[in-house]
Amino acid sequence: MSHMSASRRWALAGLVAGLAGLATSYAAALVLTIRESPVVAVAELVVDVTPGAVAETAIGLLGSADKPVLVATIIVLTCLVFVAIGWLGSRSWRRSLVAWLLLASFGLFAVLRQDGARATDAIPVVVGFLTWVVCLDLLGRRVSPASGSEDDGRRRFLTMAVSIGFGAAVVAALGRFVGAGRRRVEESRRLLRLPGVTRREPSPDTRIGVDGVSPWRTRSEDFYLIDTTIAVPIIDPSDWQLRIHGMVDREVVLTFTDLLDREVTEAWVTLSCVSNPVGGPLIGNAWWSGVRVATLLEEAGVQDGADAVLQTSDDGWTCGTLWDALTDDRDAMLAVAMNGRPLPFEHGFPVRTIVPGLYGYVSACKWVVDLEVTRFSDVSAFWTDRGWAERGPVKLSSRIDVPSSGDEVVAGAVRVGGVAWAQHVGIEAVEVALDGGAWQRAELADPGTVDTWVQWAATLDVGPGDHLLRVRATDRDGTTQSGVEVDVLPDGAEGWHTVDFSADEA
Image 1 (cartoon, rainbow, N blue to C red):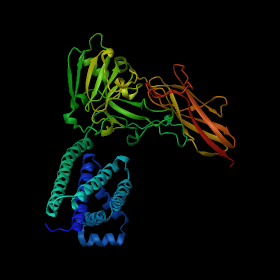
Image 2 (cartoon, rainbow, N blue to C red):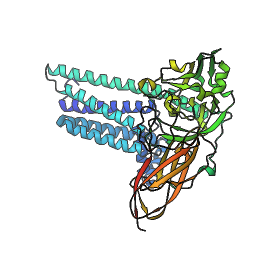
Image 3 (cartoon, one colour):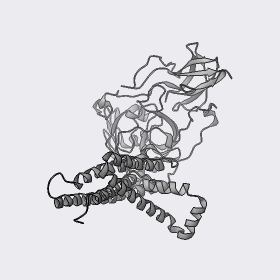
Image 4 (tube, rainbow, N blue to C red):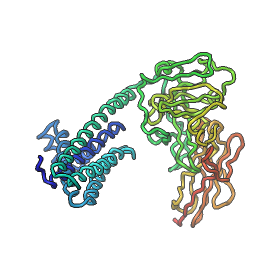
């Protein structure tokens, strides 16, 4: 080994860097609880494209060992590729970089082609690619030392190679340790039974019947995600506790079991983000199940002068919520289920807060663990400390879903549609205007509640050419949307959503 040539050291550098990249990508997949680590995804890609006759032959020869043999074969072949990339690095750094990029692209393709793949599934591939590039660079600098004896250079190279290999093994082991905890909680969530929680199907009256309009109920996996956490908290229900304290007669500490012993309330509630621009996608509607916050605060006995609750998440995020919004007739709740199932991790499992009519930055605390009853004047919370308004009521808004900007339609009677919302107030009317003409009243579906969005539709006589369509809504208090455009900061966007489209003769 002491007489290892430079070309062999480059080959070893490629192998060590490559294995380090596999280790870090594997660890990242475990930590993020992504089922499809890059190696597994590639193996499944091979299975999918293998001809049936070949697959049957492999099963006949290997039996239940066919998949482990496939994964091992892929790893061996990948190691040979690593060696080749290291050899390329001795000739040209750019060539090795292109080779790493091609290999990562193949892994990324294998990962993202899986059913239900999300953008976050690409993170392990990116982690592995960066590891490859950095480690090969570190090792490559020690293959041919700029100074010192050849023996010293070889020792420094081997020391670096062993250090990287050991570090990669530690990272993989830590990822497996952390991932095991996450998988245990995932299993707890999968087996969790929530008494009193139902799966409600939307009434046919909630649908307007126009293709392309946003579904009245948003699937949990399609619901928008906005939060400040880097790593989603993974909390076992058996470890969760909620502390209610501050200006109360008695401090209350609830376990998850304690919470489920209370009466369950359920409601359709639309949530929207204060960062949602006019016509934007940061809004969704779901069937939420939980325990009313008002009931829990009553148990604690709130003292005179209290008019707010400071909510704190397990990750330290805070929001200040007005007392009235938590205790009036709206279904402000500590939610344990979304669309009839335990909350997804990303949406606050095991418990989060839902307050109809308020933007999430002042109400929707995911992974909630602390409620401090206080005075609103004393509240210091994450987003309000950064320039956003303190109260955050959801603004009256409407959106055109059909047609989308840039669409082409057939001239004549054109069906248009979308959604409008004024949570906890309700929508009274929606109107559309084509090309700056008179406002025309749209039809409304009936959601049966003021706490959700409403689907709307209208039929317009559209001639050939380019067109501009606007929409506005009026709430049940008689307020009509203003056409004056207002930015999202500090308390939500305002303005009429407008789309441009063209119509052609049939």
